[in-house]
Length: 188
Image (cartoon, rainbow, N blue to C red; front, side):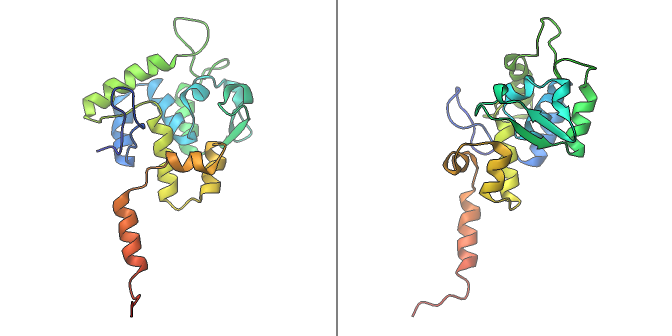
């Protein structure tokens, strides 16, 4: 079951385990599946991902231009094989990576959210929002041993404090690590 989770639009976005992510991805059709996979694989915010244009994928990177990022700074993410595959499934020849079918411009976050919420409800996942993919990715990388400074580079958080609030740290894991750290320690 997802960790944390929003209730009535309040709280933190749920953190999904890797298996839960795969189940959720399988319930979505493209372009929505590709969008949330790009959100996850780049630890991108939904607005940044939806604003991507085909020419922002270049030289082995996905480039999030400064005007499209929350921090106002350009962010580059390595174009890994899974990320390349997700993009290639939907990549148009030019323009927005995720163009709107009805309007000029790109798909809206509201449209993506509608599909994600429906799939999450079908799976019985509570508290899932579009931010769950970013939060899940950063938490998974942290659990794999990535340092906070490395994660800050990936996420483009302005401070380590902001980043730390983002990560889902399991209290049971902390408790077990403390117990292991104290093995062999004698109090006299």
